[in-house]
Length: 104
Image 1: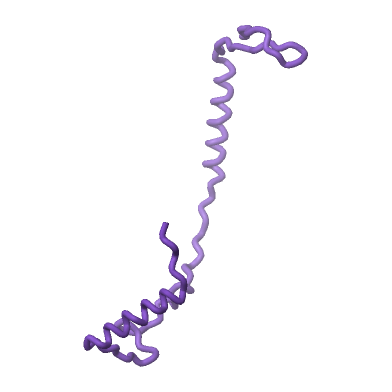
Image 2: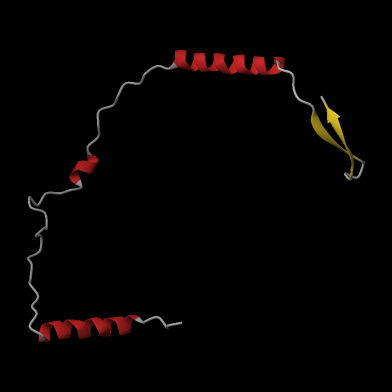
């Protein structure tokens, strides 16, 4: 496994690369403070504080009543259907299984 570089080693490598670039004829342009890469130089975050007008809410009480009515009709039908027999585990006083019994 490679050992990780320390900050001093990374700084020394960057300084060496900068020196190599400048010695090969490269130049660094000085840009005045406050100059932006945007063409119109406007604040992009100013729009984030604008809020949309408050919208009116739609009353849904009738819809909720219809949904509740459908729920209650489904539960009443479920009681009328014949249920399948299910297996039930019979255990002794200590929780050990004894046998399976079919229940209706």
